[in-house]
Length: 334
Image 1 (cartoon, rainbow, N blue to C red):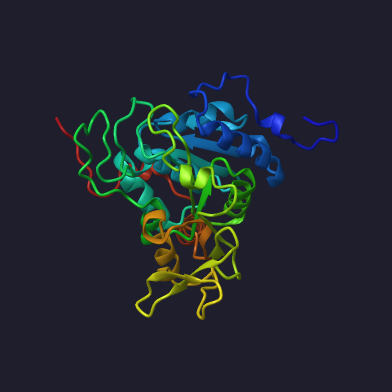
Image 2 (cartoon, rainbow, N blue to C red):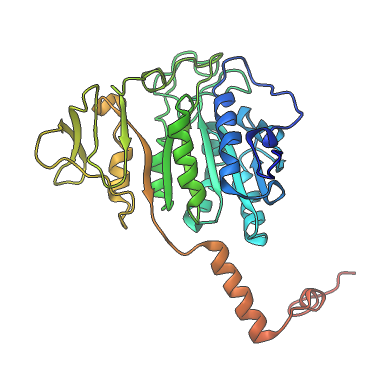
């Protein structure tokens, strides 16, 4: 810890050897998170990282906070229990596209629709890295892997569309190589009260190298479409390209000097605009939006549950668990 008592990135590093493959995008995400956490001013003992299974799931080992390496796909469920019973904690979930969207898909969507007060970081590399290169729920159609030697027949999930469809109140996208952009997104997620869902494009150099090269290596901003609240959505080397909304609600590409250029509104009450932006892809529009898609307020599950408990206590008094278990329809066997 620094001499003035303030935490630094070093304070968030553990003594554990970081064991990801050389060149893995997880290193950059870890470094960004360790550098960013001191900004929150939250004690390390009041911070918890929960993970499932996969390469991303090693995250709690490397953050000098409380943490739990849990079971496959169930990190949101475990984090829900933690967040609702310990409102004093800052709870984060580290997960991957396989862990969150395959076996964990059900837990993910229900945590988001409930608006539980925690942050979900989904590391998306479009592959199962830990189990050596099988296709994942975000792998593109026709993806040839060890488990799909003739090409995947599955239509891939769009993680942002899925989260917005589940009525998530905060949805964003970042890129592992863009530390400034990722930090800005993490900061916004941390400030949001309720479920915050952040997809991070993360490179797997061993089993799916350069899956997102079109934006990871895009230093000139040719393919990245920055979403800045209250500003026109433009991009390209000279910011000559733009987006606008058609009458049917879908998004089309236009010139930056055309009429009707879309001004980003991350706080729009309805989810339709954010969903339409989530459908903008490199393949369909020649650009990939990054930043905060949606950031709205809605009653938080933790607060609602605490309110019910307080109301029940006021009405019935303190409960007696033993009496409850032996009341009502109970019977003896034998």
